[in-house]
Image (cartoon, rainbow, N blue to C red):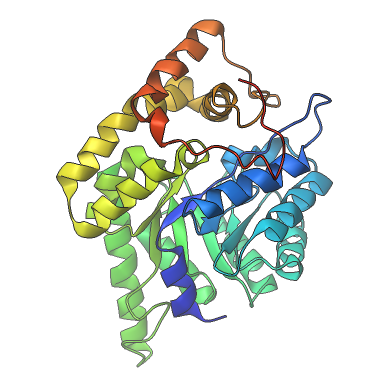
Length: 333
């Protein structure tokens, strides 16, 4: 693993593909491949099969592996694959090793779902999984503010293949504080070991804004250099426009994109993100990209919410690329 090269490739929009289902409720693998190819063809170079937008927790173990295999087979030479893993340590390790053998470049370790998470336990959990796949980059998914920058630095010291993390605490001040403390602690560790200038990238971890376009501008100003996106399934050009603006330091342009997607992202965040995936799939269904069905405990949208989705995507609907009909027949809207 070339860490610096991997971090450079991950410093972009990290797309989290949906998992489309057929009429029988099973995963539609032909459409899964076509949707992955559509993202790649439209400039998305990093894909995370089995992410939250991919209904990770609603898939059976065999389905997770089948989805990963399908997306890996759809990749091009310049595509970076980050496989989502999680659950108990043993299950996560098994899936991480499968991801390695399947050709993934990195894994994203989902936030633990047990109700009793200790910060030190979070460190041990991620370190154990990372140690099982030393040849893969590792990106922990952090959504608990109880895990401090000191804990992040401790994990980085224990697991050198932890190259970054997806930070999803919805508070830019907490993010900035956590990142600053982590980088300070990592620098202290390197200085104490006499390895100043060495480390994950020579500068520290890659911090990924894990709450998509809504938080990307604020987190970017505090040091994030990538962001995850579910919206990218609908309109990759919109996400890439946000990325270009942030890289250029053009925060007026970034604010324009933020305003354009605000209604859509607010619908996803409403009621503690109850309809996070449902909104994305409803938009895709309206655009003829896939069926709208989601699996429990998610739920399809009521007609009035589906109408709001229609309005939310209207400002940038013209930027939505079609699904390549040569890959699979388009779904009528």
